[in-house]
Image 1 (cartoon, helix red, strand yellow):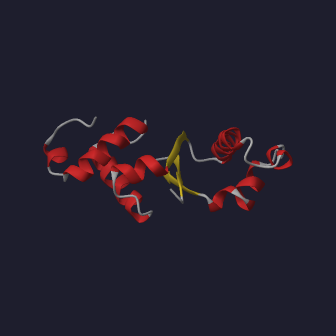
Image 2: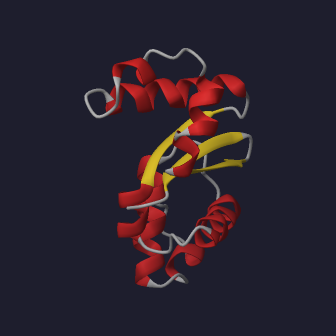
Image 3: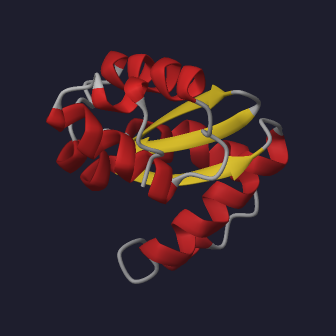
Amino acid sequence: MANLSNWYESKSLLVQALVDLICQRTSFVLKETEIDKFLLMLADYGIKSENEFADSFFGEYEGNEDDVLQQFVQDWCALAKGCLPKQLLKQNDSAKLWHELIQFDFHRFVFNGNTYFFKRNY
């Protein structure tokens, strides 16, 4: 839960619920100013409520380099096992999988040097 402060209490109940969930699910969005910027970024992707965040949030990864994309693709493939052809899952080219398949299902954005993935369709 977010720290109760004048900043928090000035938010609507809808936004307070969203802030609480952001604080529960993320590790790198910590300060009030960061949360405000994060909320604006989420709104750009149509995520404005606790339920929308809960349904669309996939993960937070430390860093913003290619290794983050590789880790995300590995995590996604582990979850997609049984839903995709084995030949596709055996590909070792994370960038290729991202560009040819996965990017159409996820938003990826970097915030404060960390990478966040949200489902496009939730």
